[in-house]
Image (cartoon, rainbow, N blue to C red):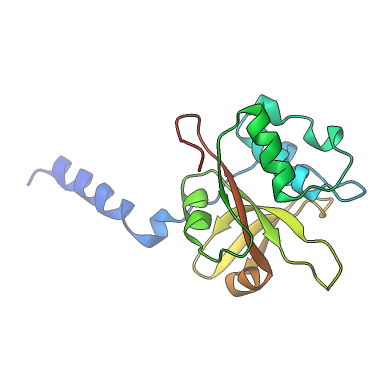
Length: 173
């Protein structure tokens, strides 16, 4: 085998290792939307992903929606704007969409269960889904930083809702 062939084979082999597959979605701080009353976390997560992906139709969501949002509100807006997405409903605990959204560099808006009965849920932006830890941007954090939490804690809080903005060539599910 030639040296060049060995080098190419090594690069290809390394790309299949689990550590090489894990990726963080690098969302610039200026794209991270901060929550405002009465609680616009869903709009914040959606606009954060839209700004990151340069989707013009999703600019100004937080400013233009002075209300809370549930998954149906978010998908209705995306349908109207003809923005393609993949949706996983609340209650579905399959993590495949979380993993693929992060490894593809797309990120996701994900739902958290209410902290107590009678309270509303919460939506954050997922930027990494690893074997041991998960990273999110919480619009309630006014500093906009990326927070790391143990995977098991994330899974305890996560309600199954996952929304991933898809590249234009991917069909909506």
